[in-house]
Length: 591
Image 1 (cartoon, rainbow, N blue to C red):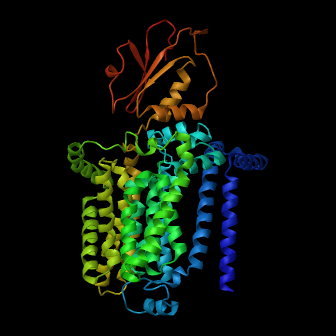
Image 2 (cartoon, rainbow, N blue to C red; image 1 turned 135 degrees about the horizontal axis):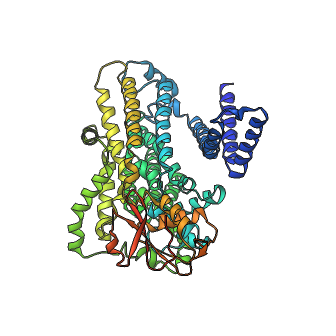
Image 3 (cartoon, rainbow, N blue to C red; image 1 turned 135 degrees about the vertical axis):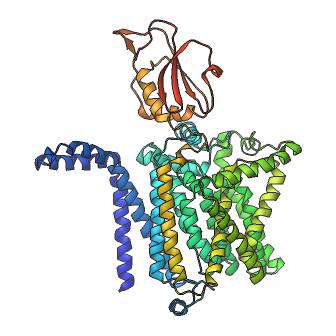
């Protein structure tokens, strides 16, 4: 009876979520607002002086709210069904796939401080997940950045063949396809352009928790999920329409699948492992940095747990290698066709090797820059604490001979070093984003081992309450400071929408716009999104006959004198952005 009630509840949640998502379409949402407005007029509720202002605000955010709630309902129902089918809450400690629920129940009721009751754990996950969802939703409305605007304008919005065009690494193909799907259904607003990255980032919160649980055989998960929730770098790339959060999600899925394979090998599991690997490469070729390490780690664990060298080669190494290569070729075949060959993928200027001395000399500054970007706006004490916990977990796992935990980071680092040396090209700092959940998993393991040594009843419960409080406080600080909005990653131009609005009001269709990278494509996007009708700007009732040059100057990157020596006048100033226009001729508009 309980199972039937639970299944019915999940089905209702799923249908409710689908209904909300469908209703968030502008046509339906506008009809609902119009219907509500009519009822308010009929019932004379609009007499209040602030009523219309409230209605305007509600009508503006109503579709977005319905869509968000729909995503929450659908996600909750799917996760609930999956957890129910896999008896997630019955396997608290996961010491083996065959562990009985009764044994887990006995352990929960004992004085052992390695876990908390199931219902409290569920409450903790819900609170942390809600914080992560809220802070990411808040930053989803940040101004479009260069890379995501470029990807949308160049690939997503230029026809089907451009979806697979790969002349530079800006096109993260799998992510681009998802963006095309969502924007085709819901429209080209920044929110829906970023939705694939947003969903990947949100799911990564849960799967880093699940990966920690798997590695620690049911213990912990509380620290890793909290760190993934509030790290500014992860929030940024969960609200930036790039494929990086998707790479993080696939990395976590590969770690979980690798653990499943090493515990109980199956050919179907190997197929799934290969499929996830190929999807990762299809998202970003830089996924090749992490794949060798995870492959090495899984192979060693298979060798330790159940297989000899011969069976390892025949059952895993060869099938995985062949299937991954074949699947990757299948996925990339339309890319190769659309791009006119494979050279644009493997031989573009961003991946071609540089001279050895340039490569070596750039490594240390690159690592310093990467560490700085990963830890921006994170208190130094938190960085030190995570580092100490991760090092402690690495040391303790070696002493305990917990090879799955101990070998994870060394294997991934070894694979990265090998690929980096073969490639002989320093990547962008954000390329290493897949290392973040690995460090968090180790820090979580260190915290779990520490809590095991604390002989205080309810220590884990108190720790979880403290974690929720810290996450809430830190998230509130990030929103209040708004520093994520000004991160320069992938080309920030916070004033893009304001500049585009001003340009739409003063530019003639024949005027020239001079604007440099990274300000150009965010501005182009907002100019396109507003879609102004073709018009002729008039001065004193007469049309201008000669085109005028407009210059957009972002003082963060460039000064006016570096762009033009023509006589110009400033017509607009917003933050660090300024708009100038040439003063030659008598047909200029005066503000």
